[in-house]
Length: 66
Image (cartoon, rainbow, N blue to C red; front, side):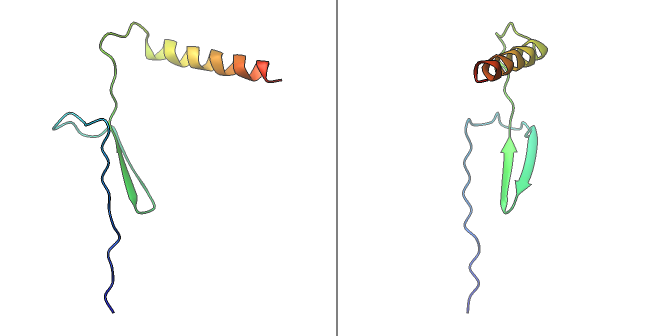
């Protein structure tokens, strides 16, 4: 009886910049996820501003749903 190897599928979207290491590698079960981060060079919003905006929006939505 032969033992079948698990099938593997590689999906990369969007295509990472060559020779750039992934920002995060996480293995869940038999699947390894490689994540690259991309930040806009033309953005005027800081990461702190973005997080605050997202939190404000989430709180606003929670208040509407009460």
